[in-house]
Image (cartoon, rainbow, N blue to C red; front, side, top):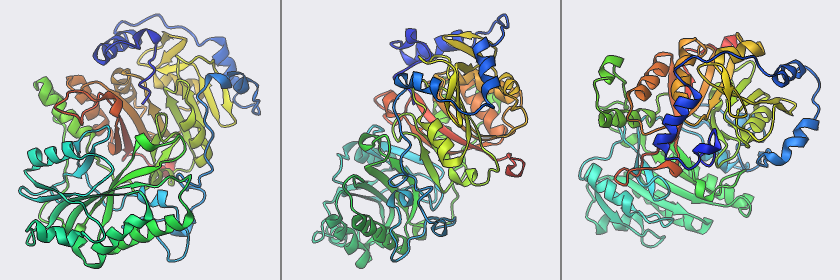
Length: 525
């Protein structure tokens, strides 16, 4: 998500379309260039990898890096603090006991049921929600939407629900006295289900409105429930978290299951979130005659016949449709720009952990935290950093290298194909738990090289930030290559800093997309 920096300062002010083209030409030129050898400093550092950690180099470059201290886990992922007996899989992957203080943050970031297609209605930056558009839950035409959220204006969301789904939208200010049941009577919809209900809570006293809905069972008429929670960990007491968890349990007992969540960037700190958007569906009200959404990419020959608009429509629909059900989604590194979402389910199956992290610039928060949380050996790469190759910490090594489709000098360092980098580091046959790349448009030429040289076969998770407008055939072809290699999307994040086209406020020219390799054999890791 590194929008504020590019692989070279020359391109900082260039429009993103030109940026993609220039980087493609500069970073991955079509003509083969004369091969060169790694500089002595990199050779020397590879030799030093086996030596005990010496912090001299790391300390020397510390002022050039974005400061980050791995949090104590109390208010974030709870990987180390949550009792193992409460963690599992199935419809209730994080159990809520009657008397223990369980971390609210971990519960709301755990998926309980699968929804493939999430349609962003309203704006990406703030005033919108993700609607489950799978045919099993898709809002019905002439269906009813109740807007009771006080956290932000919902006009653009309301307009989208009216235009896209032909829903009837009501602004319903719900309180403990002006209840959901009373609004059902006022709007004369006693024979209808409520397709969507939006709510927001910022203190525990407001939870009474939810209590009333549950007690009079009016909430059982709701098919999708969108809930924004604003509770700052710096001030929220343990007792308040327990009250929240009790309401989650009440919602669960009423039939609601979490299908998605959003760690809202506008109220995030580097270490934890002050607010979440949590998305529930009620399986009891699903249309069991229909199936989840599957988005297929046609053969290359057909893609090449499509026009730009057709390609873009399919591109965005594909990268915003999850294909793999990961229940425990963990944000590692900064909550804001710099962190990445890990499928914890898959990480728990790995016998060893090697991470390749391309495109860090000054921020090694992901690298630091993934090495701490999972005990990984992390190799971080970027040829544009203000600091040189060095050992950053006992388990994190940094190199002024970048990912490319050929080996050559670039910016402050070099770029090379993944096959060469792995060979030079002696990692040819060692499985990679996570391969992460945020390389500012160079992914479109690097990924085909990675796939064609069979470097993805023993990569378990692949995290990519895609840059571009999705209207170029090659971009859709790259997605097809990854699909054919066994990679399925388990998560995505629309970067609000890159939204474009006022009529399509949900589209962004830079999006993080997270894949799991379904052909990967964890037993060989």
